[in-house]
Length: 446
Image 1 (cartoon, helix red, strand yellow):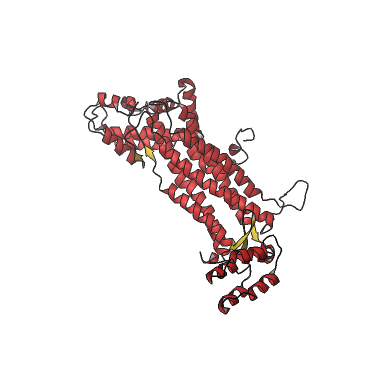
Image 2 (tube, one colour):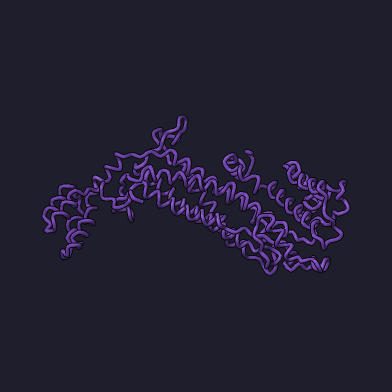
């Protein structure tokens, strides 16, 4: 909407709408409903709870249909109830009771939200949202981006490139190897996120099954709780306060932030390669680079990505630092903060798509690459002095320093120096054949 405060809900909405089923208000309400219904169904199968006999197949189908048919219109009904309750989780409970009051489950309505605190529902809802969005949106987006980086790394693995360390010319590398560095680093972070546990709990007001045990002292609530969480596809956390401590959420935020930080490094490097002319950008018909300078094709995709990654990481790092901290057995500071998980993920997804778009526009400018290398003959001081050291020539480093430092030298001066060396012919011939363009070590072998 053009009146939305967040650009994720207006300008960029079509680029992050895959996250809507998980992190929108509708997504949160639906996942709460799923947990409430799943808990009710679990209780109905517990032999120790005689007042709640096992549901019939028809009743189970009815409950499952409530989840399946829950849409934005139904979520609005929950929001209407919340205006009265001023409590979002209780609104879901009342909505569910209303839906079942004219069914055969009417006499069991008080078992909805039985012995639960709000965080029993919330922590599981958020865990399911994070797990679902991670598996179906975040990791696929990361993987698509990294596959493109790896593809370009393979395509350009043997294209020589002048390195810059401290902003100064350094031992040549290849375009592909430098991209492979980023692909390898990003892949490692993705593996960590893929293995990350998603935890959940359902153990009452302060994590001790207090009310549960009083109502049904013979029920094995600890085992029932464990089975319930496992049935949801989550890892059970048996020891908590009122809240699941959110440590796993913090770990996920840190993992995403590390991925994003590595990607910022790639964005900046590609920006500088474009500035150097190493890369050209494919033009898109109708697009405008500058409003006043018609010749410009700005690296806007990498700039947009860098900016959005900064926004994402600001939120992710706050989430990571804040969520594991709660006063005593519970305070409410996590509640409003968790509602911004989708915002942090949204800016991340937006950035990944921008970098991917930028990568698809890149074209190598081999003339610029060759020109840079052909004016960097002084770089061969490194292999020359290393060969001299091999043969025990005194002050090898100092000799090359005197030849090259602060001077503009080319092929003629370098080869003249090599020809005057008193070293075995085999090594001398190897050095004479060396050029900045061929001095890439094993960069094309990775």
